[in-house]
Length: 130
Image (cartoon, rainbow, N blue to C red; front, side, top):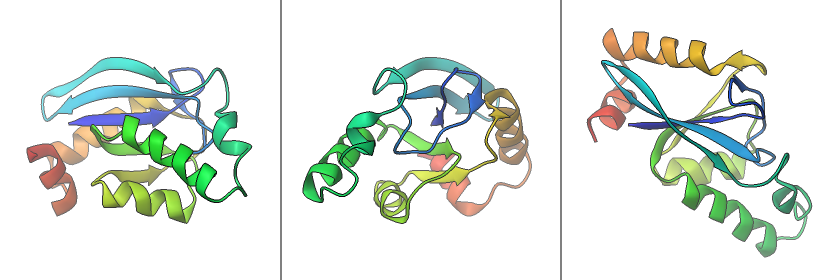
């Protein structure tokens, strides 16, 4: 399964979903993980989403485009996410997971592997088996 991490440096989960200009994408199996790509949405912060926050449909369209580009992921790690964006991800079968700012992607992947190898919750087992 594919897993995305909102990141500014490719090494840490340190960004809000909407602001994230980049996501590190990994392929994860019970046997391990491999880096796939840095998926860029903007240089630095995603100002296209930030600057349209109170613009209704324009903002919603831009968030939807970001969700579309992450639709191959089953899990997204972020530091923060708004309710509407979390619901939008969930409708697509993508689980948003909030972590403390600055947690390393490697530690997050190791914790995920440990969970997958022990007794994963039903939603995670299903995501892995899809």
